[in-house]
Image (cartoon, rainbow, N blue to C red; front, side):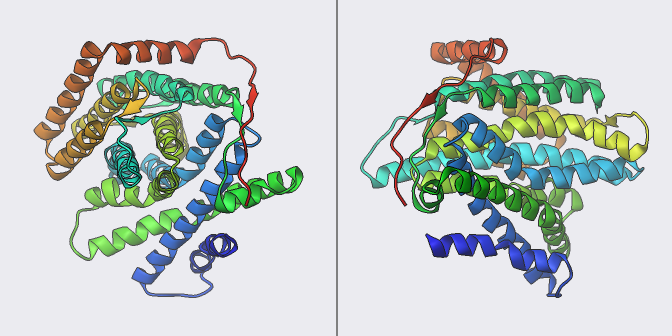
Length: 409
């Protein structure tokens, strides 16, 4: 444990040193060091989030983890929006490309991979589960994701992201975090580095947990944009389009922490926590990230304004909202099957490999038809959806603590 903890703790240091211009290396090595920094921070985040569940609800711990883990995505996308507000028209196009690419990548690759790893791990242990069952508390995520998705469908029709979206989606995010903070507190079963940290006296444990969160967040914010830039520069040397790189390569880099965390949880037989991390990441990207784009664009412009779309950008947002609706339909009954995961991945690669206007619209319609089909044919999905929607607006009760045995170091 000590070696792995030390390795993760030192992982960000070379990348930070390069970022501070303390020494210079070739582009490929520089980008690799930035990637290692993000990887080390991701390990630290996963341990800190597990330990944090000793003091706050698992839902809130995962929500905080997800928020910190997607900081690279915020850093890249908000930078593009700010530059667009300053008059750089290319950045306006790329800001939408980055946001939509990140959201679709999260579901099409992230969710699907975690589910498939879960089934592979189960098979190794001689188990044959019908589905990956989510925690009952994740009806909170389903409900807020549903409301945010319904609002997102208005964006392509309005053709802009502005301060109205900040009020609605930002308000949803605040309500989501507030409700997550009131969920039941349950002591987790910790293993490895997390168990060693959890065994510390309360004051030392809490101090170290906060320090790990802050250190990891700072490392990610410090190197993420340059990691994405490095990948773009490397890709451009092979003649790949800037739009393609910003929509898919940069989000792949910026989404790395949360995907790594989710995969680590799943490999360590905590698939519920792994999937919960990615679902929570989707909620905060689909609320706070979109909501703040208009604000940052206005700050760049020096006046109240909105990030306006052209027809292609409207298609991208429509397709992303349609995929989100399909994802809500899949998890409304708090479970995901292997076939559903494979369908998520197949649909993602289909529209990824065929980036044309009729294809985008066609896949968007396909997502909606599939979602409606699930709603219409599965009673448990309809019941789960109603329950999740109700859970968004029902009064919040005081949190309770449920104790479980805690593993030693």
